[in-house]
Amino acid sequence: MRRDLVEAASRGDHEAFEVLATSAGDRLYAVARLILRETHLAEDAVQEALVRAWQQLPSLRDPDRFDAWLYRLVVNACADQGRQLRRWTQQVRPIPLQASISDDTSSVADREQLERGFSRLKPEQRAVVVLHYYSGFSAAEMARILGIPEGTARSRLHYATEAMRAALQADARQPAVAQNRTA
Amino acid sequence: MATDERFDKTISAWLEGTAPSRLPERVLDATFERTRKSRQQVGWRGLLGRIRITRFAPALSGAVVVVLAAALALSYYSNQAGVGGTAAAFAGNWESTDPPPDSSHLSMEVIRLSNGTYSVTIRDDLASVCDGVSSTMTGVAEARDPGRLVIGQPAYACDDGSKPQALSGPPLEEQLRNLAFVYDFQGDQLQDSFGLVWSRVAMGP
Image (cartoon, rainbow over the protein chains, first blue to last red):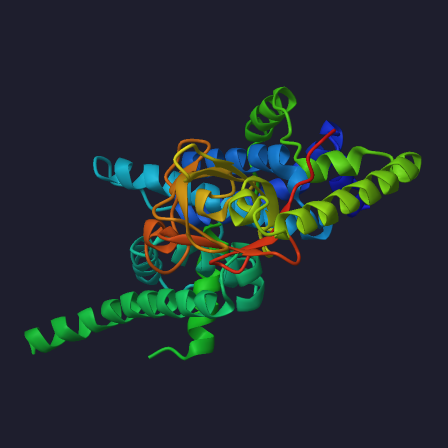
């Protein structure tokens, strides 16, 4: 059914494409906003990715790769938006996203440290963190989505995870340092 | 120190906690407004997909036979001493396909200039280094050895005006420097420095 829709859309069927885009919209938006941490840029990234998907769909050889290809387009669009974000953050300090639901993260301090650690990552590292920890893709799947060697996907994920762990550990050390100073 | 598993769960929980639930409908509306006005980029693969093969099968197979015969004759002709030779062999239109995951279509036009060099234009319909948009690479090539065409410094541009960026390794300019094509007389094919094999595109009637 889905394959039929992709094939129809690649032959120029607008309705088929709109069904596909609507069903993918929420998860693409979640990925984009988690990578960019900014609502309007994420909306723009999703829109750009979907427009590119429509335009380039006839060149997609395997309709079964449509979903992975969409993720790739949205990650690339996030990279484009990220370049704008870097210019923008030189003038405006971004506001961290508020948790929409209560999560299992142990404390507000943890969330802030994760946010800070994540914001220091490069766009390509953010992408693997989100694709792995949020979307649940393995390193091999991420490699196929992003068009990079599996080893590169693993190393990006490793470096990004270590950077975020370091951010949390730095936070954990601060109270201990403060206690030692007051003792 | 948190264990790996606990830390993984912490990151997952944090991401799930901050992920938005729905894409605003106005974004989809704006997207569809653009796609309805936008034309799809139909390459040769797309065109083939739109042709009803059953109807065109006899004509298509006939055309393939004619093209193959022409290619064989051209290959034999270009191998004759003093007739055409390597210089003539490079000129023409070529095509190739990027390896997966791009699997994009590449076309190349090689024109022999009066001073003995070649003008080369390569088009990629989906370039990773351009975030998936099409790209054009141009350059002047020299036949440095018999059967070897080299572009000293190709100029690579994304068709949407964005700057191409290498996905890994040294900068793109370095990776493309001295891009070479080796001619295979037997198969009338070119193989470039990246291992891509280029086939000659048969000329129309």
